[in-house]
Image 1 (cartoon, rainbow, N blue to C red):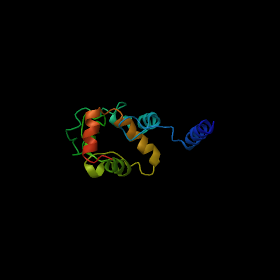
Image 2: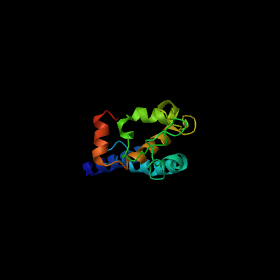
Image 3: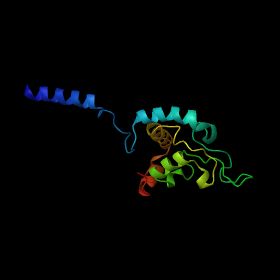
Image 4: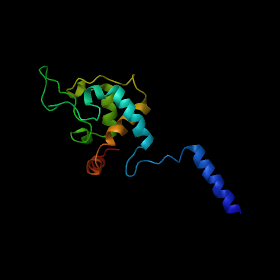
Length: 139
């Protein structure tokens, strides 16, 4: 009887504390972050990076002004070469320091929304790309 009460109490405490939200298997983020991130991405990033994070056509070719078009973020380009901190810094500071035209979002999006946007586009990375990102010190 005591064990049953203890288990019930433990379940209630875990539910209240939010520990019931597990990360996606093998990833740093939760499915809830991916779901929120899709909305954040569509509202703030998709205009340039594409709704599915596929990037601009000919993203490797510089524009007439020397800047580069938005790259894919879906795992098919170089986003996985960048650590989580670098991805956050690029979102915060924009892409101009890296040769692009992306505006800064530091004061436009909360930290949670930025993390959710990263979760969304990383959710499209296959396990091989995600593991390579981790091996490079991704998170």
